[in-house]
Image 1 (tube, helix red, strand yellow):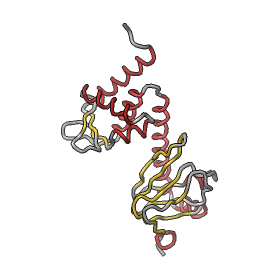
Image 2 (cartoon, rainbow, N blue to C red):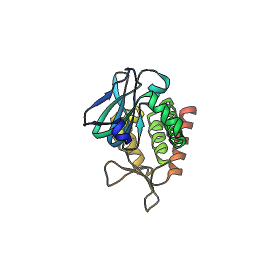
Image 3 (cartoon, rainbow, N blue to C red):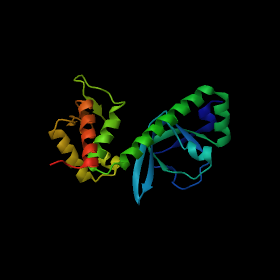
Image 4 (cartoon, rainbow, N blue to C red):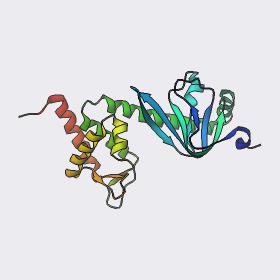
Length: 215
């Protein structure tokens, strides 16, 4: 019997798999479809991630036996593997490759979480947005002209950095006038022509915030 036959579950778009604060007794592996993770912060629901096929989620609640720290809803009709703690532990023990892949994935998520915390510690909206853009350049593809293409836009940046959409657009407009960040023909893509120059600009912003403007 295959894993899908034993542990598979079909979930149509709109299905709420679990809610923040609920006890967690299962983890999920996405075979097909897409799942969105959200969390309520100061009364506002924030999107944490949209997970495609191949990703897993919900593992922390069955590892540390604590309530769910986020909610999960199916965005696109999904085929999921649903694993309880006993099955999950048996799979990890029986297959070191699965264990290593999970450790790498969790380490990557920790890096992202640390970057988000670092971003939120920045008091200036300009610094937050530039810092977020720089973080996104680390694994982003480069175009033929050498520019880094980022799959993001003003509203997504606003949500990611907790800066208002209006302020985010103002900052992006200033960055575009300075040729530090450009709008791609695709409205959901921004281009960074020179990552080094953008990093230098962030250093300038941080120095100005620390020491103030010099007359």
